[in-house]
Figure 1 (tube, rainbow, N blue to C red):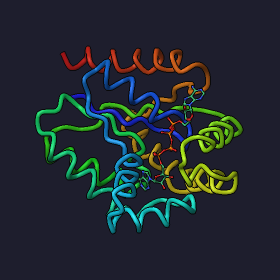
Figure 2 (cartoon, rainbow, N blue to C red):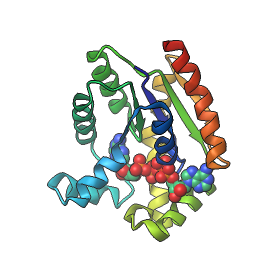
Figure 3 (cartoon, protein in one colour):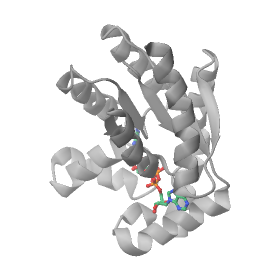
Length: 195
Ligand code: B4P
Protein backbone atom coordinates (compact mmCIF):
# COMPACT_ATOMS: atom_id res chain seq x y z
CA UNK A 1 0.00 0.00 0.00
CA UNK A 2 1.22 3.53 -0.75
CA UNK A 3 -0.41 6.21 1.38
CA UNK A 4 0.35 9.85 0.65
CA UNK A 5 -0.70 13.04 2.35
CA UNK A 6 -1.03 16.00 0.00
CA UNK A 7 -0.33 18.92 2.27
CA UNK A 8 -0.40 22.70 1.99
CA UNK A 9 -2.43 25.82 2.75
CA UNK A 10 -5.95 26.48 1.43
CA UNK A 11 -5.80 27.01 -2.33
CA UNK A 12 -2.38 25.37 -2.75
CA UNK A 13 -3.84 22.88 -5.26
CA UNK A 14 -4.34 19.76 -3.14
CA UNK A 15 -7.74 18.95 -4.63
CA UNK A 16 -6.66 19.84 -8.18
CA UNK A 17 -3.59 17.60 -8.08
CA UNK A 18 -5.31 14.74 -6.21
CA UNK A 19 -7.87 14.40 -8.99
CA UNK A 20 -5.05 13.77 -11.52
CA UNK A 21 -2.88 11.62 -9.24
CA UNK A 22 -5.60 9.08 -8.44
CA UNK A 23 -6.07 8.48 -12.18
CA UNK A 24 -2.37 7.84 -12.70
CA UNK A 25 -1.70 5.65 -9.64
CA UNK A 26 -5.06 3.96 -8.97
CA UNK A 27 -5.19 5.30 -5.42
CA UNK A 28 -8.30 6.30 -3.49
CA UNK A 29 -8.86 10.02 -2.94
CA UNK A 30 -9.97 10.94 0.58
CA UNK A 31 -10.75 14.67 0.81
CA UNK A 32 -12.27 15.81 4.08
CA UNK A 33 -13.30 19.07 2.36
CA UNK A 34 -15.28 17.11 -0.28
CA UNK A 35 -16.78 14.81 2.38
CA UNK A 36 -17.92 17.82 4.42
CA UNK A 37 -19.33 19.59 1.35
CA UNK A 38 -21.30 16.49 0.47
CA UNK A 39 -22.78 16.44 4.01
CA UNK A 40 -23.67 20.14 3.56
CA UNK A 41 -25.25 19.40 0.16
CA UNK A 42 -27.37 16.64 1.71
CA UNK A 43 -28.31 18.99 4.58
CA UNK A 44 -27.45 16.40 7.22
CA UNK A 45 -27.14 17.55 10.88
CA UNK A 46 -23.34 17.02 10.62
CA UNK A 47 -23.25 19.13 7.44
CA UNK A 48 -25.28 21.96 8.95
CA UNK A 49 -22.97 22.15 11.98
CA UNK A 50 -19.86 21.97 9.78
CA UNK A 51 -21.11 24.75 7.50
CA UNK A 52 -21.31 27.23 10.39
CA UNK A 53 -17.65 26.63 11.21
CA UNK A 54 -16.41 26.51 7.60
CA UNK A 55 -18.17 29.78 6.73
CA UNK A 56 -16.00 31.50 9.33
CA UNK A 57 -12.82 30.06 7.85
CA UNK A 58 -12.29 27.78 10.84
CA UNK A 59 -11.59 24.08 11.14
CA UNK A 60 -14.34 21.54 11.83
CA UNK A 61 -13.85 19.65 15.17
CA UNK A 62 -11.28 16.85 15.08
CA UNK A 63 -13.68 14.09 16.16
CA UNK A 64 -15.99 14.82 13.22
CA UNK A 65 -13.31 14.55 10.51
CA UNK A 66 -11.50 11.63 12.19
CA UNK A 67 -14.80 9.70 12.28
CA UNK A 68 -15.39 10.38 8.57
CA UNK A 69 -11.89 9.19 7.60
CA UNK A 70 -12.13 6.10 9.79
CA UNK A 71 -15.31 4.94 8.06
CA UNK A 72 -13.85 5.60 4.60
CA UNK A 73 -10.76 3.51 5.43
CA UNK A 74 -13.00 0.66 6.61
CA UNK A 75 -15.11 0.95 3.46
CA UNK A 76 -12.09 0.38 1.17
CA UNK A 77 -10.29 -2.75 2.44
CA UNK A 78 -8.92 -3.65 -1.01
CA UNK A 79 -7.35 -0.23 -1.73
CA UNK A 80 -3.84 -0.04 -3.25
CA UNK A 81 -3.35 3.09 -1.20
CA UNK A 82 -4.87 6.46 -0.37
CA UNK A 83 -4.23 10.10 -1.15
CA UNK A 84 -5.25 12.11 1.89
CA UNK A 85 -6.23 15.63 0.74
CA UNK A 86 -6.87 18.23 3.42
CA UNK A 87 -6.39 15.67 6.22
CA UNK A 88 -4.74 15.67 8.73
CA UNK A 89 -5.10 19.38 9.50
CA UNK A 90 -4.17 19.28 13.22
CA UNK A 91 -1.63 17.34 15.30
CA UNK A 92 -4.50 15.38 16.91
CA UNK A 93 -5.75 14.36 13.47
CA UNK A 94 -2.22 13.27 12.47
CA UNK A 95 -1.89 11.08 15.57
CA UNK A 96 -5.34 9.56 14.98
CA UNK A 97 -4.49 8.82 11.33
CA UNK A 98 -1.22 7.10 12.28
CA UNK A 99 -3.14 4.86 14.71
CA UNK A 100 -5.89 4.04 12.20
CA UNK A 101 -3.29 3.06 9.58
CA UNK A 102 -1.26 1.03 12.11
CA UNK A 103 -4.41 -1.02 12.85
CA UNK A 104 -4.45 -1.84 9.13
CA UNK A 105 -0.71 -2.71 9.22
CA UNK A 106 0.23 0.23 7.01
CA UNK A 107 1.49 3.81 7.39
CA UNK A 108 2.07 7.12 5.64
CA UNK A 109 4.80 6.84 2.99
CA UNK A 110 5.26 10.59 2.45
CA UNK A 111 3.80 14.01 3.07
CA UNK A 112 4.13 16.14 -0.08
CA UNK A 113 3.68 19.81 0.76
CA UNK A 114 2.66 22.26 -1.97
CA UNK A 115 4.46 25.56 -1.36
CA UNK A 116 2.65 28.62 -2.76
CA UNK A 117 3.12 32.32 -1.85
CA UNK A 118 0.27 33.80 0.18
CA UNK A 119 -0.75 36.46 -2.37
CA UNK A 120 -1.19 33.71 -4.98
CA UNK A 121 -3.34 31.63 -2.56
CA UNK A 122 -5.65 34.58 -1.94
CA UNK A 123 -5.90 35.30 -5.66
CA UNK A 124 -6.75 31.65 -6.49
CA UNK A 125 -9.40 31.27 -3.78
CA UNK A 126 -11.17 34.57 -4.54
CA UNK A 127 -11.09 33.66 -8.20
CA UNK A 128 -12.66 30.26 -7.47
CA UNK A 129 -15.25 32.01 -5.27
CA UNK A 130 -16.52 33.89 -8.35
CA UNK A 131 -17.86 30.66 -9.86
CA UNK A 132 -17.85 27.88 -7.23
CA UNK A 133 -20.59 29.13 -4.97
CA UNK A 134 -18.36 28.11 -2.05
CA UNK A 135 -19.14 30.48 0.80
CA UNK A 136 -15.68 29.91 2.34
CA UNK A 137 -14.13 31.45 -0.83
CA UNK A 138 -16.54 34.40 -0.87
CA UNK A 139 -14.53 37.17 0.76
CA UNK A 140 -10.92 38.13 1.38
CA UNK A 141 -11.68 38.23 5.12
CA UNK A 142 -12.75 34.56 5.22
CA UNK A 143 -9.91 33.45 2.95
CA UNK A 144 -7.37 35.21 5.19
CA UNK A 145 -8.97 33.63 8.29
CA UNK A 146 -8.46 30.20 6.69
CA UNK A 147 -4.78 30.96 6.06
CA UNK A 148 -4.33 32.09 9.70
CA UNK A 149 -6.02 28.86 10.87
CA UNK A 150 -3.59 26.94 8.66
CA UNK A 151 -0.53 28.62 10.23
CA UNK A 152 -1.84 28.14 13.78
CA UNK A 153 -3.23 24.63 13.66
CA UNK A 154 -2.14 22.85 10.49
CA UNK A 155 1.51 23.86 10.06
CA UNK A 156 2.52 21.78 13.19
CA UNK A 157 1.45 18.64 11.28
CA UNK A 158 4.55 19.21 9.11
CA UNK A 159 6.81 18.84 12.18
CA UNK A 160 5.00 15.65 13.19
CA UNK A 161 5.98 13.93 9.91
CA UNK A 162 9.35 15.69 9.50
CA UNK A 163 10.44 13.88 12.70
CA UNK A 164 10.15 10.61 10.75
CA UNK A 165 11.84 12.03 7.61
CA UNK A 166 8.57 11.80 5.68
CA UNK A 167 7.98 15.49 4.91
CA UNK A 168 8.94 16.92 1.51
CA UNK A 169 8.33 20.41 0.08
CA UNK A 170 7.21 20.67 -3.54
CA UNK A 171 7.01 23.87 -5.59
CA UNK A 172 3.26 24.55 -5.87
CA UNK A 173 3.45 27.67 -7.97
CA UNK A 174 3.46 27.15 -11.75
CA UNK A 175 1.30 25.32 -14.28
CA UNK A 176 -0.90 22.45 -13.07
CA UNK A 177 1.02 20.07 -15.41
CA UNK A 178 4.39 21.21 -14.11
CA UNK A 179 3.38 20.60 -10.49
CA UNK A 180 1.83 17.25 -11.45
CA UNK A 181 5.22 16.18 -12.90
CA UNK A 182 7.05 17.15 -9.70
CA UNK A 183 4.58 15.18 -7.56
CA UNK A 184 4.66 12.19 -9.92
CA UNK A 185 8.45 12.03 -9.69
CA UNK A 186 8.20 11.69 -5.89
CA UNK A 187 5.40 9.13 -6.02
CA UNK A 188 7.18 7.05 -8.71
CA UNK A 189 10.08 6.64 -6.30
CA UNK A 190 7.78 5.57 -3.47
CA UNK A 191 5.95 3.09 -5.69
CA UNK A 192 9.21 1.57 -6.97
CA UNK A 193 10.46 1.14 -3.38
CA UNK A 194 7.33 -0.91 -2.63
CA UNK A 195 7.82 -3.34 -5.57
P1 B4P B 1 -10.59 21.94 1.46
O1 B4P B 1 -11.75 21.46 0.71
O2 B4P B 1 -9.57 20.94 1.89
O3 B4P B 1 -9.96 22.91 0.37
P2 B4P B 1 -8.92 24.02 0.17
O4 B4P B 1 -7.93 24.01 1.28
O5 B4P B 1 -9.74 25.23 -0.07
O6 B4P B 1 -8.18 23.87 -1.22
P3 B4P B 1 -7.10 23.03 -2.03
O7 B4P B 1 -5.70 23.13 -1.52
O8 B4P B 1 -7.65 21.62 -2.23
O9 B4P B 1 -7.06 23.83 -3.38
P4 B4P B 1 -7.66 23.55 -4.81
O10 B4P B 1 -6.96 22.42 -5.52
O11 B4P B 1 -9.13 23.42 -4.69
O12 B4P B 1 -11.04 22.74 2.79
C1 B4P B 1 -12.20 23.55 2.90
C2 B4P B 1 -12.62 23.74 4.36
O13 B4P B 1 -13.15 22.49 4.90
C3 B4P B 1 -11.54 24.12 5.39
O14 B4P B 1 -11.30 25.52 5.41
C4 B4P B 1 -12.15 23.59 6.73
O15 B4P B 1 -13.10 24.48 7.27
C5 B4P B 1 -12.88 22.33 6.32
N1 B4P B 1 -12.02 21.14 6.51
C6 B4P B 1 -11.56 20.33 5.51
N2 B4P B 1 -10.79 19.33 6.01
C7 B4P B 1 -10.75 19.51 7.37
C8 B4P B 1 -10.09 18.84 8.44
N3 B4P B 1 -9.30 17.77 8.21
N4 B4P B 1 -10.25 19.30 9.71
C9 B4P B 1 -11.04 20.35 9.95
N5 B4P B 1 -11.68 21.06 8.99
C10 B4P B 1 -11.55 20.65 7.70
O16 B4P B 1 -7.25 24.86 -5.60
C11 B4P B 1 -7.80 26.12 -5.28
C12 B4P B 1 -7.98 26.95 -6.56
O17 B4P B 1 -6.72 27.17 -7.20
C13 B4P B 1 -8.86 26.26 -7.61
O18 B4P B 1 -9.71 27.21 -8.16
C14 B4P B 1 -7.87 25.75 -8.64
O19 B4P B 1 -8.42 25.69 -9.94
C15 B4P B 1 -6.76 26.77 -8.55
N6 B4P B 1 -5.44 26.18 -8.83
C16 B4P B 1 -4.99 24.97 -8.40
N7 B4P B 1 -3.73 24.77 -8.86
C17 B4P B 1 -3.38 25.91 -9.55
C18 B4P B 1 -2.18 26.33 -10.26
N8 B4P B 1 -1.12 25.55 -10.34
N9 B4P B 1 -2.18 27.55 -10.84
C19 B4P B 1 -3.29 28.35 -10.77
N10 B4P B 1 -4.44 28.02 -10.13
C20 B4P B 1 -4.48 26.80 -9.54
